[in-house]
Amino acid sequence: MKTSRISEGILEHALSALTAWENDGVSLDDCLDDLRAGDFPAKAAVASLLFEYFRHKYFLDSLLIKHARKGKVNQQMRLLVSLAAAQVFFQTGLPWQSAVNIAVDTAKKLRGPGGGAFVNAILRSYVRDDSIDRAHIPADCPPLLQERWTAAYGPERAAAILGQFASNPPISVRLRPGADVSLLADCGPEPFDPDFDTGDFRFFTLNSTAGLFDNPLLQDGSLYVQDPATSMGLGLLESGPSGAILDLCAAPGGKTIMLSELAAPGAKITAADRSRKRVSTLNINLRRAGVKAKTVAADARELPFPPQSFDFILADVPCSNTGVIRRRPDVPWRFSKKRLAELAVLQHAILKSAVSLLHPGGTLLYSTCSLEFEENLGRVQLLLSEYPDLSLVREQTLFPTNTHDGAFSAVLKLKPA
Image 1 (cartoon, helix red, strand yellow):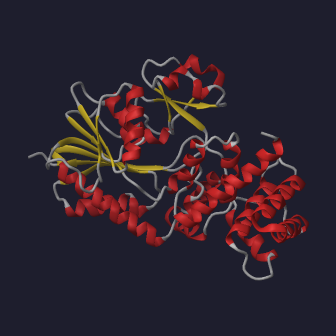
Image 2 (cartoon, helix red, strand yellow; image 1 turned 60 degrees about the horizontal axis):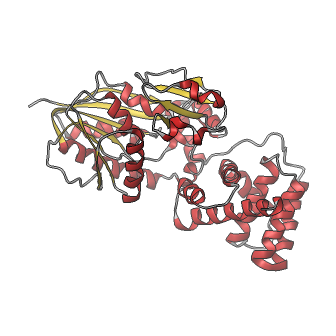
């Protein structure tokens, strides 16, 4: 495929993904999964462009408001212009003149000569705008999240969280017991130096992905691409879980595999997830890792198990994902008080389901990748108020840093019979 055609394809695929994000309510992760399933050769470039768009969405939106003075711009042209502007201002590998020309050609195909003329005029007006200091355009985030974090954690901590939003996440992997790290030599692995308890789990940060996806460690399940923060909750446990173990929202399987390594001999693991498609992925990952577990496609609020069936339950629940905005930069633009309230209701329903399935004396590990009180300690406090036989053993909030994501976990214990 010619270079010019690839450049046009990058813009067109990004436009298609962003349109689906706006119209269909799909996540950026879903858009990228669809992209990976296709045969377009420059998938990474499309992902990079979308990341820059979401990291600077307010800036790009404000430019359009400032320079498009002749009425409302239709969605297709609005998104095309903003994506092209992201290339102009934030992607140094493409000269701005080329980015403009590619956008103009794309607009002509979509909307005819008039569309091309509009895109050409508005993008060149951006470039001529002397009020823009192109060397110092910060990443932006909706005021609602900034205000919440400042109120909850103070201005210094809030600024640190926002600073992570602007950076690319590290390439983190976990090596399973017995795996030889020397087989990752081409990736330049550096041991993860934890600022929290990761238990016996070994994490590495890679300097390169060269050969990673063809690496035998990945192929045989000895290596798992995973952020170290995923181990924080399991690191709070005093001992490995035993007996009947349930992973409530298990796909794609990273924590199920970790549970299998921690579990006492003779433990039996059940892994459930609402999505049949995700359970299929879960099964693939478990087979590759050689982990034996019963898998079930079922809603975590209505699981097909008798009461008091499990000795240990992991509830890593759906959440607002505000601890992982570096990896999911569209998350801040989906965040709202209404959505947060809806998630809290869902999380509480899942937790009540989990408690009903927990054997007396059993342990419930609750976790999110959120930084919001309503989803974390607030959720735990409400649960404790409703179940007097349940007690909080320990909890921890992990804030994102340049080496790991943010997360919350709480270990809860049910009173023995």
